[in-house]
Amino acid sequence: MTHLLDWLDIDQETWVRCIQEAQFCADYRDARADRFLGKALGLVFFNDSLRTRVSMELAASELGAKPVVITPGSGTWGFAWDDGPMTGGEAEHIREAVGVLSRYCHGLGVRLFAEGKDRQQDMDDVRLKTFAAASDVPVLNLESAARHPCQALADAAVLDRQFDGHTKGKKFVLHWTWHPKALPMAVPNSTLLMASRLGMDVVVARPDGFELDEGVMDAARRQAAAHGGSVSETNDADTAADGAHIVYAKAWGGFERYTDPAAEESRRHAHKDWRVTTDRMDRTDNGLFMHCLPVRRGVVVDDAVLDEGPSLHLDQAEYRLHAQKAILSMLWESGSRSPSSEDVTDPAQP
Ligand code: CP
Figure (cartoon, rainbow, N blue to C red):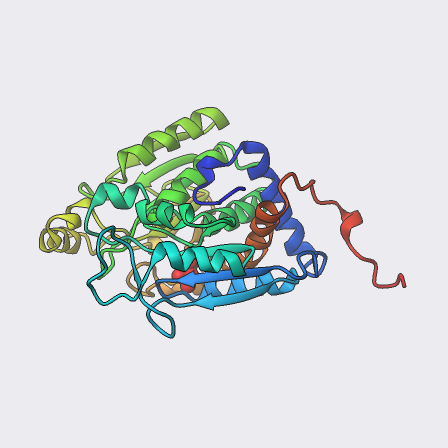
């Protein structure tokens, strides 16, 4: 049984096949209809979502499977995670909850953000792994404390298509931005790993104090070395975008928040000028803007960058649907073949 918790667990051949399958599903939206008729997909959302929830429900439905959305504590029991006597408010332990769901469903997706209490526990995705360990069916990470693989595959498929397969050597700036809240690190981690796996020259642009996890940086350097790219860092917001082909904006909190949220907030507020502006985009090499959404206009990015472009943010959101179909095929059909136009049903044929 394969889970998708992190693309680092998945071999290169499967990663490439998933990119191709996502692009195939984008070109032929109905081609995989009813492929998984009779299957059920449980979608457990501990946190809010627009894109992931809607695209995941549609992806399952369009493949013929039935999605069932569960929002713990809101219409279902609240779930306990800790070992020991359950004397708190939660009525059910996560082990029974996941065990039961995996008797009903053929796969489970889960969105489970960082707790923010213990940095290492969050970066190791301990609760996601606890969830997966309790499941008898494949588990799909719909954004955890440390990773967002669905977003990463959608973005990879968009980039591969945008550059006609020639992502290697393109300058990709992962651009930290100011945000009123200390946001999680799942998207920047997965974005960094995705772009380095595509062989891009990745620059992580962030103020001092907002470095990404060193384990993730090391993994990205290894990916870049294996695929002909590079990973570097800068703390200069004004020159980071120079000559860039992609500027990918994302806010994230510094690690200080795990022990001292007030210190983190005051440090973050000193960097309100870290916004993707039209002036900064003018310094790129006809660069494209990217963001996973939701995005705060006028805070993270100038309205004109979104409205007048060039920007890929809506393509990224659209490709979530196509990418998740590819992921479901990977999880439910290990050893699935590469897509081909022969898979398209000719509507003219009886
Ligand atoms: N990008 C993304 O995962 O969006 P949602 O949080 O709306 O699902």
